[in-house]
Structure formats: C-alpha cells, structure tokens
Image 1 (tube, rainbow over the protein chains, first blue to last red):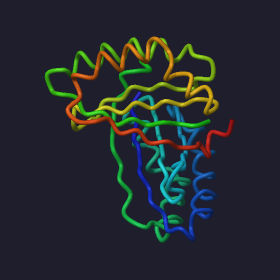
Image 2: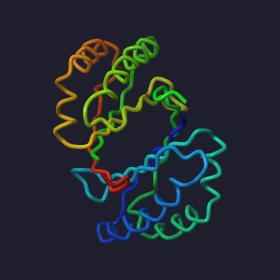
Image 3: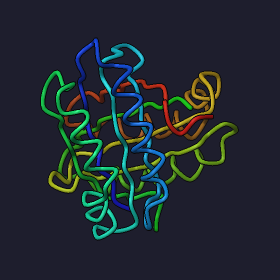
Image 4: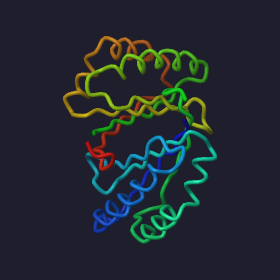
Amino acid sequence: MIVTTVIVYVKPENINDFIEASSKNHEASIKEPGNMRFDVLQCATEPARFLLYEAYESEEAAAAHEKTEHYLKWREEVAGWMAKPRQGISYKAIYPKD
Amino acid sequence: MIVTTVIVYVKPENINDFIEASSKNHEASIKEPGNMRFDVLQCATEPARFLLYEAYESEEAAAAHEKTEHYLKWREEVAGWMAKPRQGISYKAIYPKD
C-alpha cells in the first residue's frame, strides 16, 4: 500500500463548497481499481484545514487516479477556494502489509 | 470516525528499531474495540520520517488506546529514538461516514 496525504487550507467562506466537491471525489475514487482508502478529514481545531488520505495498492493505481474525470473536475472546482497551495506527501505503508 | 495523525522523526540509526516497535503496536492496536485503521507509514523521500494514522469509531475508543499496555510499552520504547518531539493532529472524518 502506498499513501499520499494532502494538506489543504481552504478559504473560510469555501469550507462547505470544499466538503461538497470532495464528497463527489471520495465517492468516485473509492470505486477505482486499486484504491484502498480515500479519507476526507477536517481538522478538529482548525475547520478550514483538511487532510486527504489517499491509499492505493500500487504506484500505477495512484497515478491512474490523477487521470480520472472526477479528480480533474475536483481539482478545477477547488482551485479558487485554496487559502494556500496544497501540500502532498508520499509514503509507503509498513503496515498494513499488502 | 475520528483520526489522529502523528508525525514522527526518528534518529537515522533507530529507523529499524522504530519499525519493529511500531509493528507490535500496530498488531495489537488493530484488535482494539473501535479501531478502524492503524497505519504505519514511512515517508517516500525522507526515510527517518514516519506517519502514524490512527482511526477510531469514537473519542472513547481513541482515549482507551492510550491506556493500553501495548501503547504504553511502545511509548516508552521509542522515547529515546525521537529526533524531535512527535506532533499529533486530531481530525474528524467527513468520509468515510460512520
């Protein structure tokens, strides 16, 4: 399993817009081949801060996500709502094992 | 679902020690009532950087984790291996829904 975490800060007035757009992205992403988790999290202390937790079986499956219609639509939709650039970090899972 | 992410930087000479200790913590934690995920991740570009991704059904289940024997043992075991203090961040999951 490989994981990308994406730290997102949205403008306060777009919190609900972001949740709605990410909801559609979540629903479609969990149906992708090789997807293991696509968690959308809101920080408990800073409601404009989110974390996307995207886990895939392989690099190929993760790369395929970035070519899907729902990802490209999400990316375009949220672009104007960012309070600062998103930060993505890549990990390999030690546990769970594949 | 609620999530705590813990960012960990270990001393380079303790990378393998940390993986071994966290392996035991992972195996026991996923058997706790209310545990949903307990992922142990190693950063793809900085091997001394780890992320623990701990998801529980409720605040109570997450709080109970911190009283378990395996967590307390892990905490004591890894203390000397930290390159800097661990940083925990709490989130509520928007997706998946409970």
